Length: 96
Image 1 (cartoon, helix red, strand yellow):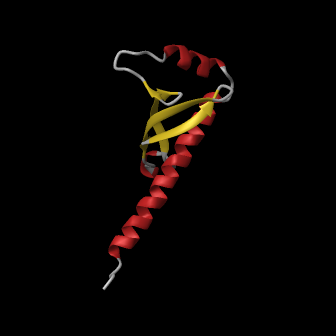
Image 2 (cartoon, helix red, strand yellow):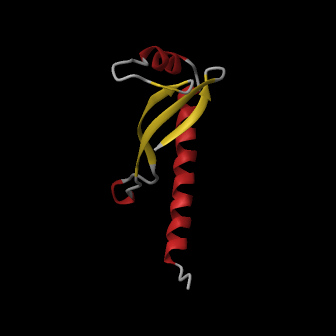
């Protein structure tokens, strides 16, 4: 999944992320973001060997920025789930 977010004073980045599912039987009570990475900076995709380490360092050094990214990921995942539920409902209806 992907989401776009403005960080560090307005720099727009696209974040690609994966989610893990809740597993209450092993103590994981809610879904979460497993990992995330920046795939576009200011609308430009990163090239194959291009590094965004400089940006990861700034994110790590700026209080609250990673939390903002994670929150955007959760919101995008929730929107994806809601749309998937709507699609399932619509496809299960008899339209005759």
